[in-house]
Figure (cartoon, helix red, strand yellow):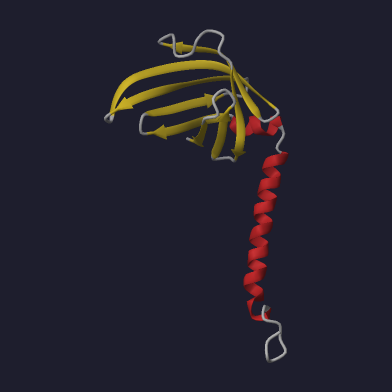
Amino acid sequence: MEPNGHFAWRGRLPAILIGLLALGFVVVAVRRQRNLSDEGLARTLVGTWVTHDPGYEFEKTYHADGTAAGSVIRKADGKVTETWYFTSRWRIEKQVVIIWDIKSVPAGMFPEGTVMHDAIVSASDTKFEFRSQEDGEEFVHYRK
């Protein structure tokens, strides 16, 4: 209590309410993400996604029918050194994107029979964060 008989937080009530409101939005956003079904995640993932890195550019389009196609452009010193195109099949199970039947041009980007498992760390309409279950690498795709 302050000397005037008021509680110290009284003058800060608007700021406290705004803070609680913001915390509520964060909790709701996290809860929504955790409650997304595999079907909801799949609907959100459909579309074209990109990743830009100093060593490569990645672009992949996920189609609603469970097929995907994309490209990987490798760079060195700002110059393109190699370009691969690929197709695959995909599905989501227990918030893990499973990718199989991968074919690349030129051949050899993925050994025959490769199956990849990418756990969804977070998901929104504009950004997907993944963690490879094979090697633990984390990566982010942004909606194009």
